[in-house]
View 1 (cartoon, one colour):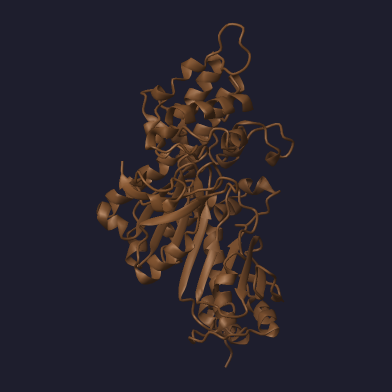
View 2 (view 1 turned 60 degrees about the vertical axis):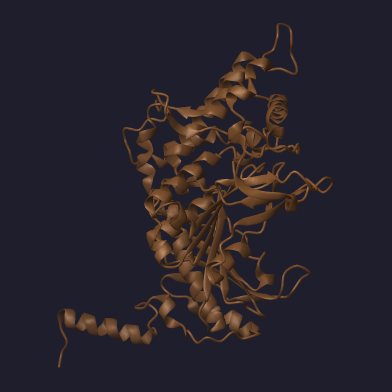
Length: 511
């Protein structure tokens, strides 16, 4: 009997499904065994054969087993491309997998693979993605799909592939999936929690870029102040010394770190005293330079004096963040622009879908609401109820002296989460914020910022042991010290006795 029309089409489609072994008609995650078996030794052939995950969605290279080094154990590594552009890399220890996966999201403009080795020795499988473009190709912002991949889709799709790869390799389900990232990586982490709440069980989000509508206008206005009345490295050294002189000892310990910069007000800094007298050339600031510094400390205000974007907290002015964002940077190619300067060009590209938008006429003070057009890239909700309902745990950390992503943003977001999710106590059951004194953007600075957030998130997620404090150490080898990082709003306070360089001499309490 002859088959005609759509009946024939259906027959052909079903036949193709059988011939392709369900490759094109089934989600990749559904094809693999979930038998709970953790094989202690995975052969090179098993690793190589992971290329068979290739289908219409995944282009997968044959896996390779890399021998152990002094710091990294033997592991299987797989590279793949999703949707022709999203590069993903997955690493899996060949011995003693602990059933966990850690995904590393990337900061800045992404475009590179993040950390995929640091936790292999602790038994984690790891993965990361460039989100769909390479770092030297910033034209991705002109491509609608690529911009969405950078915005949020790339991490989600890479997560699905990483899970499929790990489960295929070990022939076992992942027991717990974790994600960590800072800056843009922190934004990606928050978007996973809010938009794809089932992807991860535990998330570590550092200094998240919550919203471009807040971040970009502040940076552009900072660039304009700097162009008109530029600060120099000598200026930053002077501001740093002034902040430490006025505010370092407010917590009873002089250690080069301002423990709670909120107590170090612009009034207390008394910047006018730094004004150059007639004939002075060094060790002082011009009136214009003081205006630039005041803007950076104060933040971006609208015409009615309301805060559009909070300012930078006093302290660590000479630690690198201010200079990196305000001075011309080789990170952008020819060294002619600062990172703040680059915001205008990036914004013009991202706003191309709005014909009336004119970057030359854009006023950060009055026109910031226009940037709502970029809502698809922003953390636009504080409702984490789905993530919480699935048992998810979220640990956020934020440096008090972060320049580009200033700390008040994280505190404001915490308050919104508390309002949306049943108050302070109920929010603390699944979301905790740790403020880091003396840390600039994501890492480094004069404070004790080197901390392990992995064990706390694992214990919280798997054993429901919530972290109340996390010990951190400073980077200095000559006069290093340690401090407890506390769950906000608590901060570390010296007990009045004992070695001030030891975390054991401090306890956590609310100021």
